[in-house]
Every structure is written in C-alpha cells, then in structure tokens.
Length: 389
Ligand code: NZQ
Ligand code: ZN
Image (cartoon, rainbow, N blue to C red):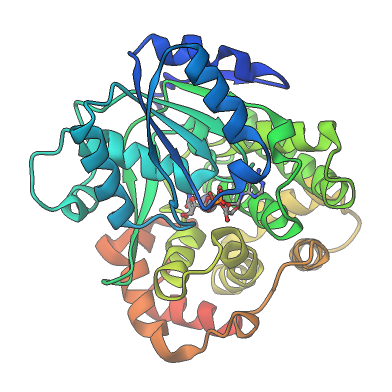
C-alpha cells in the first residue's frame, strides 16, 4: 500500500429537499451570482424556477450562462469568464451534470488566468492558486465532478478533449430526485462512467489495499443492482440515491487509496473518441472496457489474479479454472452494459478506423499509458479501438 495525500474541501448536502441550503451556501461568498446551465433540462424539470425563486428571495443578482454543451467547449468557458468579469461575479452556481460543472470549474479558474489563451490554461493545467468559489446542484449521476477538483474541456477545432486539475466545488447539493428525469440513455451512460472510474483504479498492481478494493467492489455491485431499477422505474428514490452517492465516491480518489496512478487507460482512449466524434463519454467507456480487459488479459498473463478477484467478488463466480473465471466475468460485464440499452460497438456510432492512429498517439501523449496496469503502446491502443468496431 503506497503513501497517499488526500483532501476534499467540498461540503456535500445530500438528499431530497437540500436545495433549501442554497441561499446560505451562496451568501457565504457574495450576492452576485453566475448561474451556469446546459441546454435546458433544468427548465424542463422545474429546477430553474425553484432556484430563481430562492435567488430572488435571497436578494441575489443573477447573470446567466446557458447552453453549455455535453463535452463542454472552450468557447463556453471563454464566454463564462467574460460574463464573470463584466458583472463582477462573486460566486458561480452550476446546475446540471458533469459538463456544466466542469465548464464552471474552468470559468472559476479562467477569471484569474493571466494569459490570453484559455485553451493554454487547460493544456498546462494544475496548481491554480486562485479561483472564484463554485456551488453546484447536481442533476445527473456520472462523473463525480461534484466531489473532485478535475474538469474535462473540449476544443473541437483541434480535436482535443483534455482533463485538467481545476478547482473543487465549495458546496455540492446532491438531491437524487433531480435525476428522476434523466433519460434511459444518459442513466445507463452515467452508470458506465461510474463503473469505469472504479475499474481505472481497481485494475492495479497493489494487492494489499483491502479498503480501496472493498469500496470499489461494493460500488460496482451497487451500480449494477440499481441501474436496471432506475431504468425500469425512473422515480425510484433508493435507486437514484445509491447511484448518486456512488457517482461522488467513485471519482473522488478514495477507491484508489494506496494505489499507483494507472493513467486511467479507458478514459485516455475514450476522450479521443469524444474529441473526434463528440460521443457520450459513458457510452464510449462501456464500448471500450470489455475489449480493453480482454486485450490486457491476453497481453499479460500476470493480470489474471486481478480478474479472478473481480470475477469472484463482483460477480460471485466460482468453481472454474482461473482463465475461465476471468473470461466469464468480462462476458458478464459486457452483457450487463448491453442490457442497459446503450450502443456497444463503434459502428453503431458511425465511427470507423479513419482516425485510430492519431487518436492512439493522443491517448498515449506524455507516455500516459506506460504505467498502466498493463502498459499499452500506440499499436495496442489501435488494436483495442479495432476490436470495438
Ligand atoms: O444540457 P442539458 O439540457 O442540461 O441536458 C443534459 C445533457 O444533454 C442532460 N441532463 C442532465 N441532467 C438531466 C438531464 N436531462 C434530464 N434530466 C436531468 N436531470 O444529460 C445530458 C448529458 O449531460 P452531461 O453533463 O454532459 O453528462 P455527464 O454528467 O455525464 O458529463 C459528461 C462530461 O463530464 C466529463 C466527460 O468527459 C464529459 O465531458 N467527465 C468529467 C469528469 C470529472 N469532472 O471528474 C470525470 C469523467 O471521467 C468525465 O470525463
Ligand atoms: Zn469518466
């Protein structure tokens, strides 16, 4: 078990009705609020009206940034920075999923960025000493952006989508009832994303991190138990609540306590799919994950014991030889993803081989995948993309 340093400064208000804490949470930072949101779902579900009423009652001045895209663009970050500067904003209120929260994190840092090119801020991210305070209201269980300091921003002109260390929310309001309206497609994709955040740390070489592995296995089982329930019965509070708490913990760093950074290979490969084809993050991950698993198991037989643990502790498999157990666990995972109704091949997303080589180069920039659980070369990545066709 390796040394680790961990701090999460975010205060989470979890559960139905916690929105009543919003005025107090914002007032700690000032009265001029930038309200950031996406393409309109918060209006359709009535949350916009609830929030506006609370803000008006509390005497806040509101400036709005709407239309933040899924896979948020650097142009939206720039627009948010401009609005913050022009309106002397005290605090950003992000209402939505990971895209809105990520974009808001970049805006919060961008306000104090001294360079001219905000894309360079993302490229050279990390170590920001100053950011506007950020409060969020989460509406989709997936990324964990509500409980981490990272953000992922896209530059479609360059076909680049980069994760950056930005800033943590000061307060996250996590009310599972706001996710009742999330579509089956986004529910399934979000759950695949939560599971991938676990896989990225679980498949590692440190075998003595029982706490981390136990949390990881519990999250995987919880997501596979409650996603089908949420799909069938979208207003099932227990299902939505369990998925929401899994979302926050899975990407928090807690399930990786004591483990080496693996470079998060499926995320590295998925971000390229999104950068070139603007696909939904969780769908790309669900397509890649079982193929990546089969590839690394074949490439490096020393990976086998981890897969056997996965098979036994997550799927409750037993009684076969190790190789058969591992293969069955991967097959079950793929079948589970398929059962949630999302596309499971790149062809279904109209993606062909055209950009695989350049995507593989990008995915492996700075030798990112050299320290993965099973290190991957550029050719390995191309091969994994091919098996996803
Ligand atoms: O834009 P609106 O109209 O709000 O609609 C959104 C969007 O179309 C909709 N939606 C959200 N809440 C809803 C709802 N629809 C109905 N009812 C609700 N309650 O869902 C669609 C997707 O929203 P988005 O925010 O894009 O989804 P998600 O939360 O999955 O975020 C994805 C982004 O986060 C990044 C991804 O790469 C992607 O850019 N990630 C961020 C991470 C982080 N900050 O730590 C880690 C992740 O690995 C991930 O890379
Ligand atoms: Zn993710």
